[in-house]
Image 1 (cartoon, rainbow, N blue to C red):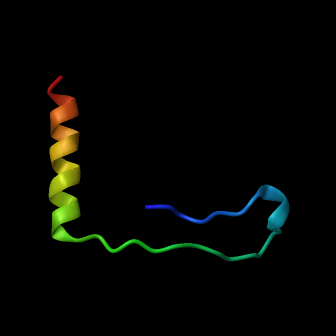
Image 2: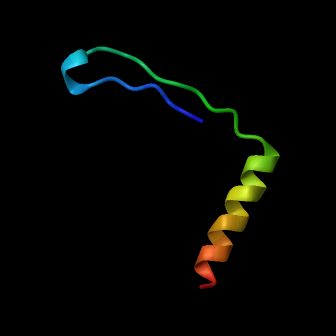
Length: 41
């Protein structure tokens, strides 16, 4: 997954930009598993 960004000289005050990511149940379960696995070590 690659998010597109802008360099600091490409934006000015008031500009708006962004990307979106759909959070599915699968992503939540995977993220929780990674979190708890790293917390256990």
